[in-house]
Amino acid sequence: MKSVVTASIVIAAAGLFGNYLRFSNRMPDRQPAFSGIPFEVGDYSGEEHRFSDQSYDVLKADTTTLRMYRDSAGVTYWLFVAYFSSQKYGSQIHSPKHCLPGGGWKIQKIEPYRLALQDGSRKEINRVLIADRERQQAMFYWFETRGGAIRDEFGLKWDLMMNSLMFRPTDAAFIRLTVPLGNESLQQATARAERFFAAFYPPLEGSLPFHN
Image 1 (cartoon, rainbow, N blue to C red):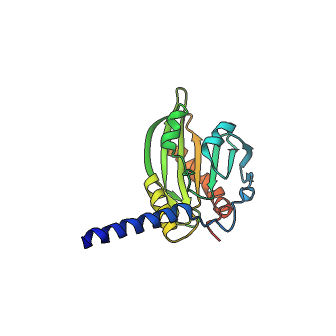
Image 2 (cartoon, one colour):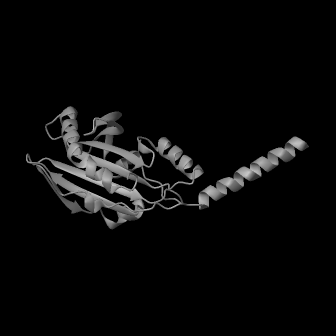
Image 3 (tube, rainbow, N blue to C red):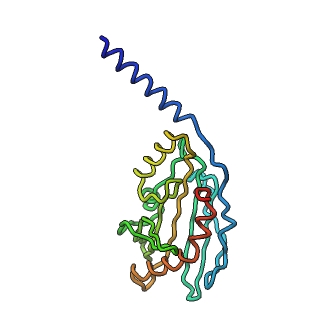
């Protein structure tokens, strides 16, 4: 009988604590400042674009930026960043693994990739080869939180749980760069992406509220 009472108390306490975590929400001290990401850097020149209103309704991000850049060779780079001030209450980030097929893209390959940064460090991200009927593109994406870069959805949920337990903000960002292959190989497109991030990652990182 005693063990049953003890188990009931533990279950009830866990339920109350879980409910508290669900409805408690510490908001971040500041919002992202995407205006700090330049449109002109070296040989790159960019402009702001938008998806359809329906896409933003599904995404449920607090703020986003969608940029199309061109380099001196005319190659395009699509940079998309979506920021979520909280991942609770049904506002979890949508995975490209689910969204891409719905948009008519087929995922031909997805693999971990270590992105080299300007300071000599490396960031664990995803490299994806996608295709529709007429073209192939290389996509590089990851989730960024106060804990750093996260590659997969499981890691994102774990990060959410840990931040909730520690009563920290549960904000997160989704970062994606898409580069067309054209007549190039995946390795050549990757080299272009590396050069792009070398120019744009420092201001991109500074625009997010995760780092001082």
